[in-house]
Image (cartoon, rainbow, N blue to C red):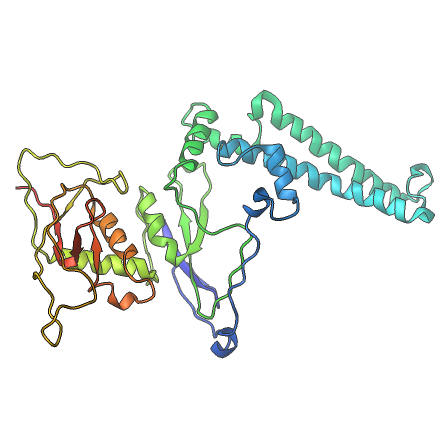
Length: 355
């Protein structure tokens, strides 16, 4: 996969290149507040009037339970609704303009007869396609045909079941919110990731996402992303802190567990093996300028918990316990142990190295 990037204020001409155009004056944009449209969850809570999307959800089922089946039905219903729109416009024009006599088809001019034929033939054609897609339990639907190419000779329903299970995972990667618009005084960097298929009979596609979501996407991918042009990807504040957290922990003393001790999976992500242990290595009391204890936080204490966390989850926990309005104090801050609540600082986080 190759990555190229785009700024909100300008687009790149070639893959892997970044161009920055002159943005609007900051003093004008600084007065603007973030503008967000209504959330798609609001109609389901009853706070907004009934919408077309809510009607489609009623006819198509739940997206959270059956992702593939929902979108198969949604695309079919959407195609039918759009196909009937011209006929609805024609009937509406005939009702509100009776002087045109549009319902007397045999008396119309050839032009209006052709328009009526198109308005009537389009929904009938789409209806025949919908019946064809529905035949054999939606096996002829374009989405099902795409999944057949990924089934390795098996059934497309097996691929659909795997996608449905993945979508129900609570830790799935989701980029953006449909129907949301956001205005900000600062520029945003967007990445265009070209996904090249191993199978030659499958076409390539692109993924466009905000650079702040790039690190979350990388953790979910099994293949590596090749940065062909060495693009500098803008990191979020959390990613910058995690990088500094990893660098600080790498300089701390290591912890050697007993040979018979088996390390469990991290209880934070359940994907990595526990690889850090809290061992008190800082001074017993941090002294201020006048010889008194620093009131910034409590004194660190020894943690007696067994290793149950990985380095990344421990860094995220540490960042979540800091003052979010003062990120400049995060590196010198303290946090309670997520298990026993013993206070620790970054100097107390030790990497686990087997003997």
